[in-house]
Length: 73
Image (cartoon, rainbow, N blue to C red; front, side, top):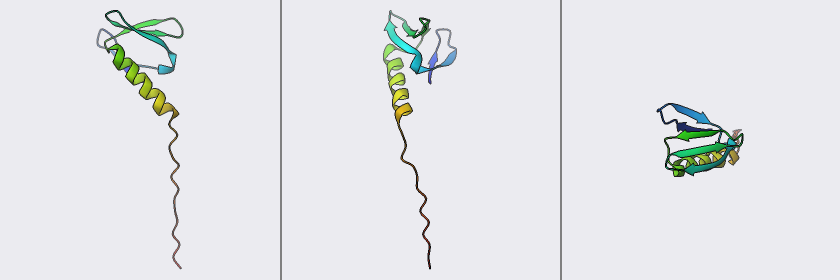
């Protein structure tokens, strides 16, 4: 999910998996896989950066933490 801002200043959260493409004309239009279009305040580059960061975080698999028990005899 990425946080964006509508032109009226209202923030919202968008599932970045639903982005089909982003255009600058001169406002930034985000077209979704459903065909819906959303106009946002962020630049095209900002939307792309947030979407890429989201995808990287989504596919990041953290290394499991292993608890080591040191038994002393």
